[in-house]
Length: 260
Image (cartoon, rainbow, N blue to C red):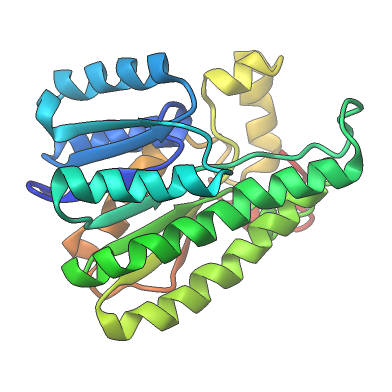
Protein backbone atom coordinates (compact mmCIF):
# COMPACT_ATOMS: atom_id res chain seq x y z
CA UNK A 1 0.00 0.00 0.00
CA UNK A 2 1.19 3.52 -0.81
CA UNK A 3 2.39 5.48 2.22
CA UNK A 4 0.50 8.63 3.17
CA UNK A 5 2.91 9.46 5.98
CA UNK A 6 2.52 13.10 6.98
CA UNK A 7 -0.38 13.76 4.61
CA UNK A 8 -3.56 15.35 5.93
CA UNK A 9 -6.92 14.05 4.69
CA UNK A 10 -10.37 15.48 5.35
CA UNK A 11 -13.04 12.79 4.92
CA UNK A 12 -16.74 13.67 4.99
CA UNK A 13 -19.36 11.05 5.85
CA UNK A 14 -16.66 9.04 7.57
CA UNK A 15 -18.73 7.03 10.04
CA UNK A 16 -20.21 4.41 7.72
CA UNK A 17 -19.61 2.34 4.60
CA UNK A 18 -17.02 3.61 2.16
CA UNK A 19 -16.15 6.65 4.25
CA UNK A 20 -15.31 4.46 7.21
CA UNK A 21 -13.33 2.01 5.08
CA UNK A 22 -11.39 4.92 3.53
CA UNK A 23 -10.55 6.33 6.95
CA UNK A 24 -9.23 2.96 8.10
CA UNK A 25 -7.18 2.51 4.94
CA UNK A 26 -5.56 5.95 5.14
CA UNK A 27 -4.95 5.59 8.88
CA UNK A 28 -3.06 2.34 8.32
CA UNK A 29 -0.90 4.16 5.74
CA UNK A 30 0.16 6.93 8.14
CA UNK A 31 -2.28 9.65 7.14
CA UNK A 32 -3.43 12.37 9.54
CA UNK A 33 -7.22 12.39 9.55
CA UNK A 34 -9.98 14.97 9.97
CA UNK A 35 -13.27 13.07 9.85
CA UNK A 36 -16.84 14.33 9.78
CA UNK A 37 -20.10 12.69 10.79
CA UNK A 38 -23.35 13.57 12.52
CA UNK A 39 -22.93 11.22 15.47
CA UNK A 40 -20.12 11.92 17.95
CA UNK A 41 -20.24 8.39 19.39
CA UNK A 42 -19.81 6.86 15.93
CA UNK A 43 -16.89 9.19 15.27
CA UNK A 44 -15.25 8.16 18.51
CA UNK A 45 -15.63 4.49 17.62
CA UNK A 46 -14.05 5.17 14.23
CA UNK A 47 -11.19 6.97 15.96
CA UNK A 48 -10.57 3.89 18.10
CA UNK A 49 -10.49 1.73 14.97
CA UNK A 50 -7.97 4.08 13.34
CA UNK A 51 -5.81 4.03 16.47
CA UNK A 52 -5.73 0.25 16.38
CA UNK A 53 -4.38 0.58 12.83
CA UNK A 54 -1.51 2.81 13.92
CA UNK A 55 -2.86 6.37 14.08
CA UNK A 56 -2.21 8.23 17.31
CA UNK A 57 -4.80 10.32 19.11
CA UNK A 58 -2.94 13.46 18.01
CA UNK A 59 -3.26 12.41 14.36
CA UNK A 60 -7.07 12.38 14.46
CA UNK A 61 -9.58 15.23 14.48
CA UNK A 62 -13.28 14.44 14.93
CA UNK A 63 -15.76 16.93 13.48
CA UNK A 64 -19.38 16.22 14.39
CA UNK A 65 -22.04 18.27 12.64
CA UNK A 66 -24.52 18.67 9.81
CA UNK A 67 -22.73 19.70 6.62
CA UNK A 68 -25.87 21.11 5.05
CA UNK A 69 -25.22 24.15 7.29
CA UNK A 70 -22.69 26.65 5.91
CA UNK A 71 -21.30 27.52 9.33
CA UNK A 72 -20.50 23.86 9.98
CA UNK A 73 -18.69 23.53 6.65
CA UNK A 74 -16.67 26.64 7.45
CA UNK A 75 -15.80 25.25 10.88
CA UNK A 76 -14.70 21.89 9.43
CA UNK A 77 -12.16 23.52 7.12
CA UNK A 78 -10.98 26.04 9.70
CA UNK A 79 -10.46 23.46 12.45
CA UNK A 80 -8.69 21.04 10.11
CA UNK A 81 -6.16 23.64 8.99
CA UNK A 82 -5.82 25.01 12.51
CA UNK A 83 -4.88 21.60 13.90
CA UNK A 84 -2.75 20.21 11.07
CA UNK A 85 -1.57 23.49 9.41
CA UNK A 86 -2.37 22.14 5.94
CA UNK A 87 -4.69 19.99 3.83
CA UNK A 88 -3.48 17.46 1.23
CA UNK A 89 -6.50 15.28 0.46
CA UNK A 90 -10.22 16.02 0.41
CA UNK A 91 -12.51 12.99 0.21
CA UNK A 92 -16.17 13.78 -0.39
CA UNK A 93 -18.28 10.89 0.83
CA UNK A 94 -21.58 12.48 1.88
CA UNK A 95 -24.66 11.09 0.16
CA UNK A 96 -28.42 10.96 0.61
CA UNK A 97 -30.89 9.29 -1.72
CA UNK A 98 -34.01 11.46 -1.58
CA UNK A 99 -36.42 8.60 -2.19
CA UNK A 100 -39.32 9.91 -4.29
CA UNK A 101 -41.73 7.50 -2.65
CA UNK A 102 -41.15 8.87 0.86
CA UNK A 103 -44.71 9.65 2.01
CA UNK A 104 -43.53 11.71 4.96
CA UNK A 105 -42.03 14.52 2.89
CA UNK A 106 -43.27 16.74 0.08
CA UNK A 107 -41.51 16.32 -3.30
CA UNK A 108 -40.10 19.84 -3.08
CA UNK A 109 -38.67 19.07 0.37
CA UNK A 110 -37.04 15.89 -0.90
CA UNK A 111 -35.54 17.77 -3.83
CA UNK A 112 -34.14 20.56 -1.66
CA UNK A 113 -32.64 18.13 0.87
CA UNK A 114 -31.03 15.92 -1.76
CA UNK A 115 -29.51 18.84 -3.66
CA UNK A 116 -28.36 20.61 -0.50
CA UNK A 117 -26.50 17.58 0.82
CA UNK A 118 -25.29 15.94 -2.40
CA UNK A 119 -24.37 19.04 -4.40
CA UNK A 120 -24.42 22.34 -2.49
CA UNK A 121 -22.47 21.18 0.55
CA UNK A 122 -19.85 19.54 -1.65
CA UNK A 123 -19.52 22.68 -3.78
CA UNK A 124 -19.05 24.94 -0.75
CA UNK A 125 -16.62 22.62 1.01
CA UNK A 126 -14.55 22.35 -2.16
CA UNK A 127 -14.49 26.14 -2.55
CA UNK A 128 -13.24 26.65 1.00
CA UNK A 129 -10.70 23.80 0.76
CA UNK A 130 -9.26 24.77 -2.63
CA UNK A 131 -6.73 27.38 -1.41
CA UNK A 132 -5.26 24.91 1.06
CA UNK A 133 -5.09 22.13 -1.54
CA UNK A 134 -3.42 24.49 -4.00
CA UNK A 135 -0.79 25.27 -1.36
CA UNK A 136 0.07 21.56 -0.97
CA UNK A 137 -0.54 20.53 -4.60
CA UNK A 138 -3.12 18.15 -3.16
CA UNK A 139 -6.08 16.27 -4.56
CA UNK A 140 -9.83 15.74 -4.31
CA UNK A 141 -11.65 12.42 -4.60
CA UNK A 142 -15.44 12.41 -4.83
CA UNK A 143 -17.31 9.21 -4.03
CA UNK A 144 -20.79 8.74 -5.44
CA UNK A 145 -22.85 5.93 -6.88
CA UNK A 146 -23.59 4.81 -10.45
CA UNK A 147 -27.13 6.32 -10.66
CA UNK A 148 -25.54 9.29 -12.42
CA UNK A 149 -25.53 7.18 -15.58
CA UNK A 150 -28.17 4.51 -14.95
CA UNK A 151 -31.91 4.87 -14.47
CA UNK A 152 -33.41 4.67 -10.97
CA UNK A 153 -37.11 5.43 -10.85
CA UNK A 154 -37.37 5.63 -7.06
CA UNK A 155 -34.26 7.81 -6.72
CA UNK A 156 -34.87 10.43 -9.40
CA UNK A 157 -33.50 13.40 -7.46
CA UNK A 158 -30.52 11.35 -6.29
CA UNK A 159 -29.68 10.49 -9.90
CA UNK A 160 -30.02 14.15 -10.91
CA UNK A 161 -27.71 15.22 -8.09
CA UNK A 162 -25.09 12.64 -8.99
CA UNK A 163 -25.16 13.65 -12.65
CA UNK A 164 -24.53 17.23 -11.51
CA UNK A 165 -21.48 15.95 -9.65
CA UNK A 166 -20.14 14.37 -12.87
CA UNK A 167 -20.05 17.81 -14.45
CA UNK A 168 -18.77 19.45 -11.28
CA UNK A 169 -15.89 16.98 -11.04
CA UNK A 170 -14.86 17.50 -14.66
CA UNK A 171 -15.18 21.28 -14.49
CA UNK A 172 -13.31 21.70 -11.22
CA UNK A 173 -10.57 19.34 -12.42
CA UNK A 174 -9.96 21.63 -15.40
CA UNK A 175 -10.00 24.69 -13.17
CA UNK A 176 -7.58 23.32 -10.57
CA UNK A 177 -5.21 21.36 -12.83
CA UNK A 178 -3.00 24.38 -13.69
CA UNK A 179 -2.67 24.98 -9.95
CA UNK A 180 -1.40 21.46 -9.33
CA UNK A 181 -4.55 19.96 -7.80
CA UNK A 182 -6.00 16.72 -9.16
CA UNK A 183 -9.74 15.95 -8.98
CA UNK A 184 -11.25 12.51 -9.63
CA UNK A 185 -14.30 10.49 -8.68
CA UNK A 186 -15.03 6.92 -7.69
CA UNK A 187 -18.39 5.44 -8.69
CA UNK A 188 -19.13 2.19 -6.88
CA UNK A 189 -22.16 0.06 -7.60
CA UNK A 190 -24.33 -1.39 -4.87
CA UNK A 191 -22.16 -1.99 -1.83
CA UNK A 192 -22.73 -5.01 0.39
CA UNK A 193 -22.51 -3.64 3.92
CA UNK A 194 -24.55 -3.38 7.10
CA UNK A 195 -26.80 -0.76 5.47
CA UNK A 196 -27.76 -3.22 2.75
CA UNK A 197 -28.97 -5.78 5.26
CA UNK A 198 -30.69 -3.17 7.41
CA UNK A 199 -32.81 -2.28 4.39
CA UNK A 200 -34.26 -5.77 4.43
CA UNK A 201 -31.96 -7.49 1.94
CA UNK A 202 -30.49 -10.62 3.47
CA UNK A 203 -27.17 -12.14 2.32
CA UNK A 204 -28.77 -14.69 -0.03
CA UNK A 205 -30.98 -12.07 -1.71
CA UNK A 206 -28.06 -9.67 -2.14
CA UNK A 207 -25.90 -12.43 -3.63
CA UNK A 208 -28.62 -13.49 -6.06
CA UNK A 209 -29.36 -9.94 -7.25
CA UNK A 210 -25.65 -9.40 -7.78
CA UNK A 211 -25.59 -12.20 -10.37
CA UNK A 212 -28.39 -10.61 -12.38
CA UNK A 213 -27.28 -6.97 -12.29
CA UNK A 214 -23.49 -7.24 -12.46
CA UNK A 215 -21.49 -8.90 -15.27
CA UNK A 216 -18.87 -10.06 -12.77
CA UNK A 217 -21.68 -11.69 -10.79
CA UNK A 218 -21.21 -9.98 -7.45
CA UNK A 219 -21.64 -6.70 -5.58
CA UNK A 220 -18.78 -4.42 -4.60
CA UNK A 221 -17.44 -4.14 -1.06
CA UNK A 222 -16.69 -0.89 0.73
CA UNK A 223 -13.02 -1.82 1.11
CA UNK A 224 -12.73 -2.15 -2.69
CA UNK A 225 -14.08 1.36 -3.19
CA UNK A 226 -11.76 2.60 -0.44
CA UNK A 227 -8.81 1.03 -2.25
CA UNK A 228 -9.75 2.96 -5.40
CA UNK A 229 -10.01 6.19 -3.41
CA UNK A 230 -6.63 5.49 -1.86
CA UNK A 231 -5.12 4.94 -5.29
CA UNK A 232 -6.53 8.15 -6.75
CA UNK A 233 -5.31 10.11 -3.71
CA UNK A 234 -1.79 8.68 -3.99
CA UNK A 235 1.30 9.62 -5.99
CA UNK A 236 0.66 6.50 -8.09
CA UNK A 237 -2.16 8.48 -9.72
CA UNK A 238 -0.07 11.61 -10.29
CA UNK A 239 -1.02 11.74 -13.98
CA UNK A 240 -4.76 11.16 -13.44
CA UNK A 241 -7.30 13.96 -13.18
CA UNK A 242 -10.87 14.38 -14.37
CA UNK A 243 -11.35 10.61 -14.21
CA UNK A 244 -14.62 8.91 -13.29
CA UNK A 245 -13.59 5.46 -12.08
CA UNK A 246 -16.35 2.87 -11.81
CA UNK A 247 -15.98 0.16 -9.16
CA UNK A 248 -19.24 -1.65 -9.84
CA UNK A 249 -18.56 -5.20 -11.04
CA UNK A 250 -19.39 -4.04 -14.57
CA UNK A 251 -22.95 -2.94 -13.77
CA UNK A 252 -22.70 0.25 -15.85
CA UNK A 253 -21.89 -1.66 -19.06
CA UNK A 254 -24.91 -3.97 -18.95
CA UNK A 255 -27.61 -2.75 -21.37
CA UNK A 256 -30.63 -1.48 -19.49
CA UNK A 257 -28.87 -1.79 -16.15
CA UNK A 258 -31.57 -2.06 -13.50
CA UNK A 259 -31.79 0.14 -10.45
CA UNK A 260 -30.07 -0.84 -7.18
